[in-house]
Image (cartoon, rainbow, N blue to C red; front, side, top):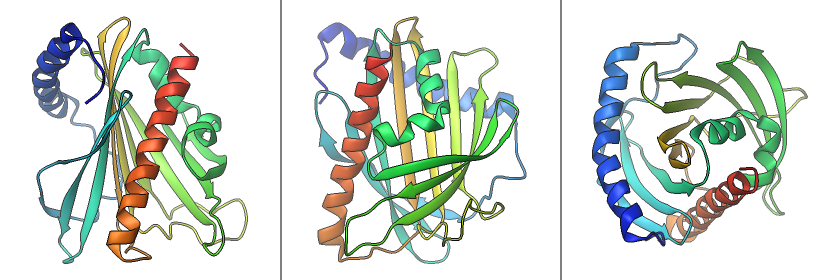
Length: 233
């Protein structure tokens, strides 16, 4: 587990219960829908979360999602507790698409395709991968929601085919991609951060080879994020 003192562990334990309740309240209060969000694929069932990798910075888990088309994909989740960092400053880092290559593993380039107000934007990603793998390209739309009462930020991310890339390339060959950031202020200087994501692309290699590598890459990405946010506090 993360290297936390007993006081922090108690706070995190209390917060976990409150956080689940607050998310339920948030879903009931906001009632916000956006036609640009593609609600496919349909998830029929989910397995329990299993521990993936733990270190002093983040705790990571995975679970299986059973889709309506019969496929199974892995969803990964990272959790971290940031001391001396405000929820607002974390949200600012997430919004800053230019910083993504500094923390997201293998991302070599990002470009803003569209920004519609403060709460909606579309980003083009270039993933530079070593030979014999080829580079991959992704277009994501991001919707930010701020709870009207609670100190909670949500960033909903989803791949989209509604926009043209800045140059000719095959985009979204990750399949359908979804991600979700949850940023909750426990106090002015103590912030809980959670990120989860999955894609529907089938594995390129046998899972016993690919999954441990992807798990390490996911964890490294989140550790990078932890350090970057702390550098900017």
